[in-house]
Amino acid sequence: MIDRPKHIPGRVQAAHEISKQFSFEMACKDRTGALLRTLAATKPGGQILELGTGTGVGTAWILDGMDSSAHLITVDRDKDTSDLARQVVGEDARVDLIVADVASWLKEYDGAPFDMVFVDTWRGKFIDRAELLRRLAPGGIYFGDDLLPQPTWDPEQPALVDSFLREIVEDSDLAVTMMNWSSGLVLAAKQK
Ligand SMILES: C[S@@+](CC[C@H](N)C(=O)[O-])C[C@H]1O[C@@H](n2cnc3c(N)ncnc32)[C@H](O)[C@@H]1O
Image 1 (cartoon, rainbow, N blue to C red):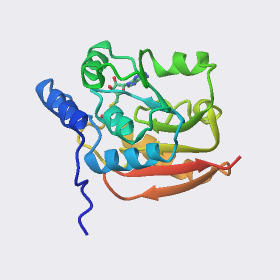
Image 2 (image 1 turned 135 degrees about the vertical axis):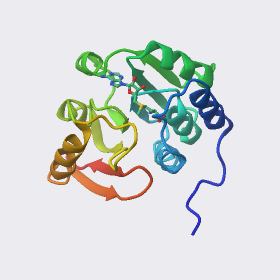
Image 3 (image 1 turned 45 degrees about the horizontal axis):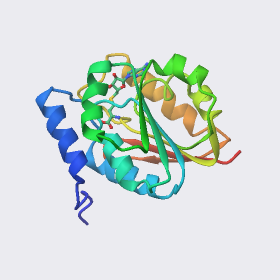
């Protein structure tokens, strides 16, 4: 079985180019991106959130799966990488790129509950997870990556990941599947 995505959308290719050019090494992998696209396609008209925009690789995959009435908010505290993602996204009115720290942004968010969240920062995964899950709609998808060792990990990350892996499967509000695939994924749906 060939599990690499056959078609890489043009905007994803552009985001990879920019990542290479600016030595951004934390972009999501294409297998992860293909799954993101699939998940986004299950939420027509959905409200979708990405925590950690980076250079826009995941953003581009999600946009490729979304229909014309779905809406994506993506948040990153780094204005420089966010500006690069803005080049990737162009004039797509379905997405709002926000430059903010996830911690303060989440506290202040008072919009519609999310139908899907892609958690690609520590915040929402290792920290502030309950805060984020409160904003996930019933049936909403919680999706995170980088749970297998990555060259970009900080020294304290293995311990954080170990705690996360222990805790997330015990969360009785979530139907959780751990995936030893791509960079190591968690795919969960909110049941309550
Ligand atoms: C792994 S990268 C995101 C990659 C991107 N989602 C992709 O699919 O290619 C993590 C990003 O999170 C951002 N970040 C880290 N901590 C943050 C925080 N507390 N608030 C907002 N952004 C944060 C970093 O600036 C970085 O761009």
